[in-house]
Image 1 (cartoon, rainbow, N blue to C red):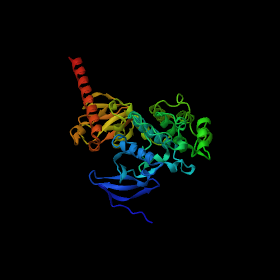
Image 2: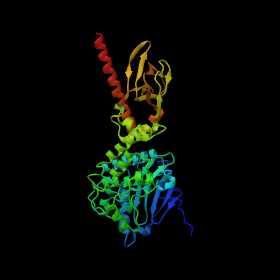
Image 3: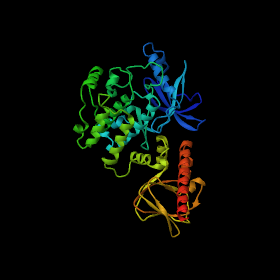
Image 4: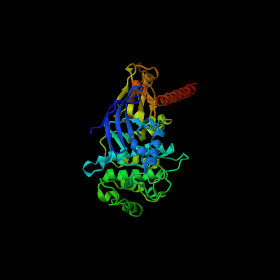
Length: 427
């Protein structure tokens, strides 16, 4: 019998069915109030009344619903709304046009190594953010990681999450056996290090097309996770860099004291190997992100704002001797120097040399329109630049705009201080 598709669920207009399984059906819907498409996961009512598993399912659904609005991160699927009552049970989520990573764990569909590193790096940042908010995902696996059509990455399904700052009793035995950490298998109390282990297993799978442990039964699999060492990824794929093998092994170490202590440390090592060890045709988003993190201009920016900047900026590598801005020209964009030096002149006078972390041309944003350039700027060395248009920044979040405003004020203060020093020296 063909499934009857509702025309609406409360205020949400149903567009189509995205998927259906034993526990729920996911619909594509339209929210007229916010004017956006959303995904609605509607749980089968029979689950909640099941005498054996109903209580567990209700707990998992309540878990996910409780996170609505709490996990605002570019690499986490947003949870907007939730309803849990006797007659209806659903969660409203961000709609991601794409697919999960399941397919890319198969040998015939493996992604480029640098792409895998970037995916895991973004996941590590997202899970570090969740950890800071007292949340352990507890069910990290390829099926719970979405990749959009434009290549963006988002972690989904926090139904099994542990809220470390909650007084509620932690449910044990929840998760996907093949990706469980040894402490999860032992039913011990968990920390965020369990997510580090599971993310390491995901990385192992995406790099090799194999699971670290295979078994015919859950019991046998559990014994291997507890007692056996996984085959090294370079034994399965010799061309992989040795440093990458060490990173995966450390993330999956059975002993907590030998595993990464913090998700941030895992992300840092991934960023370093992306920069140093992996051949790339162009600079990856991971390397750009870490470059911005180390620039003084972005000192007060959080991870979320930095990813926004990455989205709205255009990056370019410019040879020495190239004129970037001409005095007297009109311009509707500004630059931030990521690497190298530029020379600033006005008429025949040199005003100074600016290096990484400095900006120029920002008056077009401050005045919200095209402005006449008051100086000439030339690349004194090969220089890497971020180019941003005021319109793109105007459409960014208020938090991102606020941090730009502060950065520009600091820049203005620094320039006034330098001008005072120069005037004092003349007198």
